[in-house]
Image 1 (cartoon, rainbow, N blue to C red):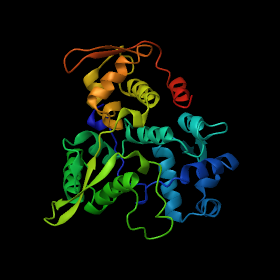
Image 2 (cartoon, rainbow, N blue to C red):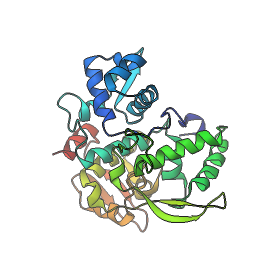
Image 3 (cartoon, one colour):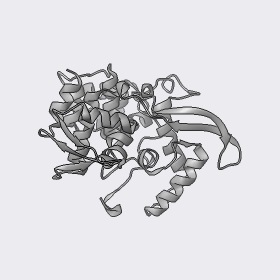
Image 4 (cartoon, rainbow, N blue to C red):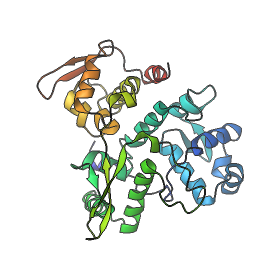
Length: 300
């Protein structure tokens, strides 16, 4: 994927992180009337949200690969249909596996990645940052890609990432106090305070590495197949380094320890043939990379 082919998204969320109830409520509204969500007044009345939150909800439906709109008519995408549609696997996001899958779909867009997600998960060398440090990095990265967004836009976008995984610390309204479907994953943590880019003491945030048991082997298998189909389509072999550290990879996205990922591959000979070679190694798929089948196995 060349720089010209990547069109990162910096806004559209109206500064609101997704709330737990939004996706299920929107899916039910789409089932009743596929056009209602495109009408601000009807959506406000049906969903009980303000206008900016309705716009944010539309953004998150598309960002999570749950639904899309064409000519004002909304319809569920295959991923959204499988999880939230009629006879969906987890229509009310009651299982942590669903939360991991939502994080995966949100974080791994190939052509239209969310800029903050791409930068924080895949472009930085260090796992820890303050808001001002992150702002300076995002400004430089945005300029490198040919964008000239204001610091306000960049910082709001960074804050949406933070609030998506840590929730709202000082909610301004009851709706703000409702955390979203990614908060319980433990991907982002607070690590005290230090002097940031403003030379003032600021909260420090850090990406965590997580035990594989907290994610689930079936989720990881789905993520491997999804990564392979999206970024290595047509290739019969993928390197372990790419699978563990590459942009949009299961290792980097799900925050898996390298040794844990290696152990998982070795314990799954019915799906993956892993040939170790020092720090590298190669993986071959034993069977067809059927994402829909692997998705069902997550809930088996």
